[in-house]
Length: 127
Image (cartoon, rainbow, N blue to C red; front, top):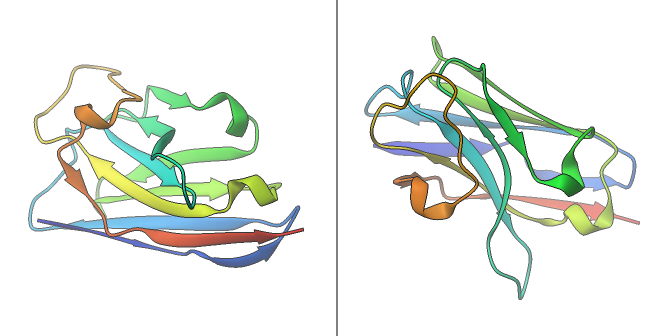
């Protein structure tokens, strides 16, 4: 099982990026997925999560209104659209997936809720 994150890069403050996380090796169409990030010298933190059917979404307060998580179960892929980027958004972004299927609109902000992790993609926002 592999989660391949992509789409990171260098962008100026106020700009936008779209991250993608493509899963292979099994389907996650019935599983909650999420994005986390880790800035240099800091602990990994929750960014956004989405339920298997996209009915439930959850965001960290600092990204609400700027980031949007979505998924395409047919493509086994989760996305993170990031707008109005700020220098404090600079981090390595990781996608994650829960191993077991989840209920209707289940989401979680806890790293312990997820069993599979991607390798990360670096987002750098310059001021």
